[in-house]
Image 1 (cartoon, rainbow, N blue to C red):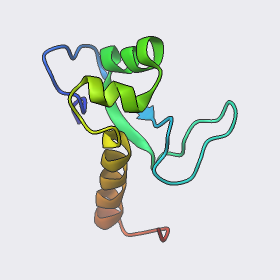
Image 2: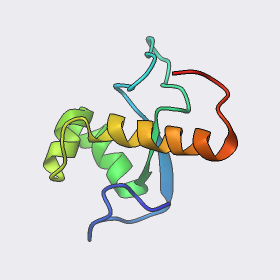
Image 3: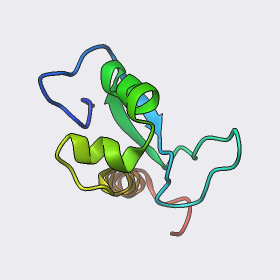
Image 4: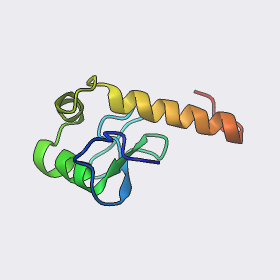
Length: 91
């Protein structure tokens, strides 16, 4: 799966980014979001998000997407996975 930004600046391998602002559930101090709240980012964009911008909403707007792009993508990926593999949890 390619980086969800998928533009000319992508570089490095793709990593799973656990949302800072999950679409479902929450995060606690020092805790990451659950695995149903992940999106693919290349190493470069993952670094930009964490080290330069620090805010997912601002990050996605910078790359021409809606603020909620990450949540919407993570939800869609999770729902597609559940459809293919059988739902184990109800939303």
